[in-house]
Image 1 (tube, rainbow, N blue to C red):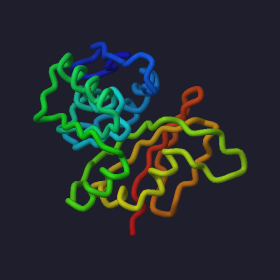
Image 2: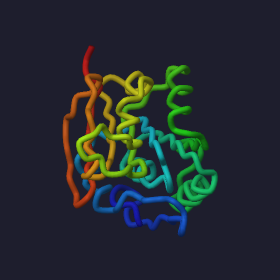
Image 3: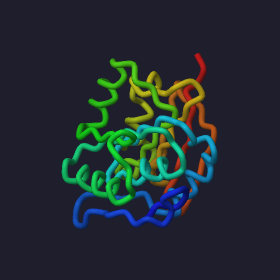
Image 4: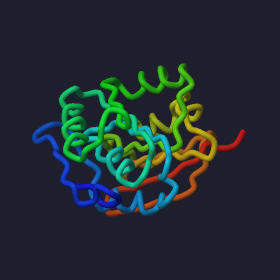
Length: 193
């Protein structure tokens, strides 16, 4: 796995072996960031279910101002720190919170934190044939705190498996849908109130 574009392009990122992690593939990452284009420049990014921090490091490589990673596993957070060090990214631009995503969303929302782009490629759920999804991606879209944390004209970029049919709530408007093999990436905006 590597950074696909920007000033740190081609730098290799470490991925933990034999741990419950499914990193976003380089092809999917490249498609997401090519789709975002210059919109990533000078933004404040929040990465949920950060794993190795690959999406945050990609965003920083492509010109975002700051990135915040939320990762529940302390073991995985060590990989984020290692990858950041290897790419030359310091703690002044990359913050790491070892915490459950949904607890973090509630706490960050209470402090008034806002982000221009929220990136999330959570662990995939089970197939949901003719029933409402119970996946982490669906739980994110349903989260009551997340919309208030997205700055005006900001985006939520959420990945899920193609066999996981998400219901997009009335809080969101889908602006783009990217499909790569078994991966679907939805780019959502907060629906104007």
